[in-house]
Image (cartoon, rainbow, N blue to C red; front, side, top):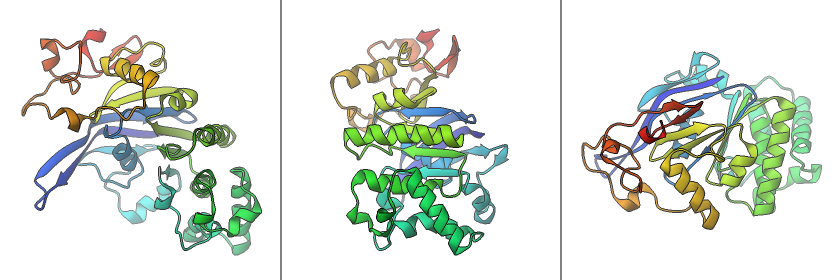
Amino acid sequence: MLKAENLHYVYKSGLIKIAKKTAVDGVNLEIFPGETVAIVGESGCGKSTLAKMLVQQLDPVSGEVFFDGTKLTGMSWKNLRKFMGKIQLIPQNPDDVVDPRWTVERSVAEPLVICGVFSKEEISENVDDLFAEVGLSAEHKTRYPHELSGGELQRVVIARALALKPELLVCDEATSMLDVSVQAFIVTMLKEIQKRRGLSLVFITHDLEAAKAVSDRLLVMYAGEIVEEGKDVFDRPLHPYTRALLDAARYMSLEVVVPEEVGELPDGFSGCSYYRLCREKTDACKEPQKLQNVSGRLVRCWKSK
């Protein structure tokens, strides 16, 4: 279904855009029909930047994204619009999607209006069905965003994302701003919608419990790279960073040390991105580390052989 090949993205800063920070560094990813892939990692590891490249909100510095065999990267907006109904992003912040000046009914209806193939009656019927699907009543339709709770507003965003019958939902920290009880409700609802509609899900989060609950396959990101990928990562972590991440989750929030806080690796350093923090490092870790297949698991660490 969706395939990403060697994606790179670099943020530039400063008045003349000289300072650079690599946010995504050579990510390869494939999503298959009907599966849920969770992508986890601490804040600043590149998860959200990757999500935006997958849905074509950011153009990669290099690399390509394909959907059903068609290359999306570099496609004109006119042609890209044909695919955008099939891939939808559910962002962390509903304010990125809903207009505070509009009723939430209008926000959900907007994609149907833009595509230009539905009558007013059909749009109204579709909106009614979408609200019912996410557990909102007809009374919610005439309300404005500020009149809804966080969980209700996130359900509006999900309803809007479902309007054009997508094949893939990319959920970028879609529950992180909600209370714990509401998070569980939203995750359960997404899984039910997925089963009913036959969707694929990319679930991006720093919440390991949520990732474990929803995923068929788990990807672990650190400093812009995929360092581990597999189906049983939680039960048998192989990369030192994955083990540290799971240990941290047992005792504290995952808002822990990010690369900027430990300093950059030396200029010209081409070894493991986790080298500075790894307690298991050796001189061999100063060499480039590639993802290697270890009993069906992909791991970016020579010691996992």
